[in-house]
Amino acid sequence: MVDTKRINKKVIWAISIATIGFGLLTLKSGGFALFGGEAGKQFAGDYVPFVLWFNFCAGLFYIASGVGIFFKKSWGVDLGITIASLTAIVFALFGVYILSNGAYEVRTLGAMTFRTLFWVVISFFAAKQIKSNLLNKLS
Image 1 (tube, rainbow, N blue to C red):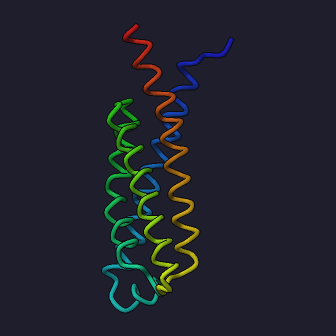
Image 2 (image 1 turned 90 degrees about the vertical axis):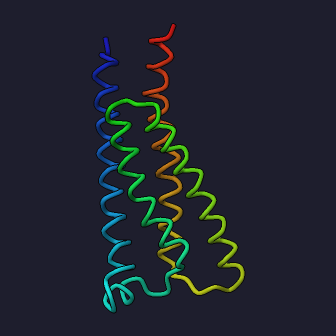
């Protein structure tokens, strides 16, 4: 028989580590691009300011969501869903920017695809683990 509590803890732990780590990496790379002087500007290349600032600021919320998920708080899941939604909106606006012939780095297109998919998947699995446990406790 499978111990569902143990699987739940492992999944929660993995999701938390992934989101917190991703948040720290996002803050590091975004902070360098924004505040790293000439080296940061060269690193960023043809960056799109609203995308860079959004991702940098979102890094703090990535960490917060990861902490909430680690402690199995529903607000951590809700924050993850919000991050996924806002990232998708910024990605769509980035698409409009590209279609209007704005300069951009191709890696930004890949990064935004990854970020959007990451948060959709993370939110789905976190909700499945945490929200289902809350519903079971209520019934």
